[in-house]
View: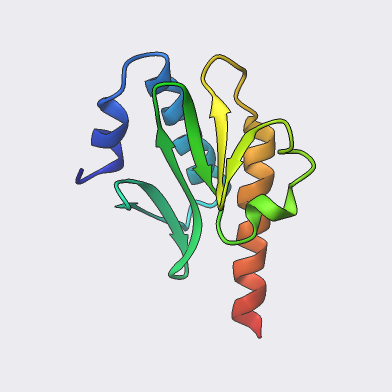
Length: 117
């Protein structure tokens, strides 16, 4: 995959729309983030540090808000299936855009704070 657009366009609707909306959320929340494909999924970095990754799957959208975004929101994410560094948001449920936005904002703040040290 050579671009996020190509990645998203490989999926059928309504998953394509969900991924597009997620992409727009990240880009509008942190417009200075660098967008790329990493680990075969859309990836966003700020000042060279991971901000968030996401991936589409048949049954869910995986969100990887490494390294601290997931642990910081453990209570809010408790009803979702999780792995080490990942959260699965089922495709048959409403996507929690506000929660993901908070995770992105948290990671942005964490990265900016570490730059000041």
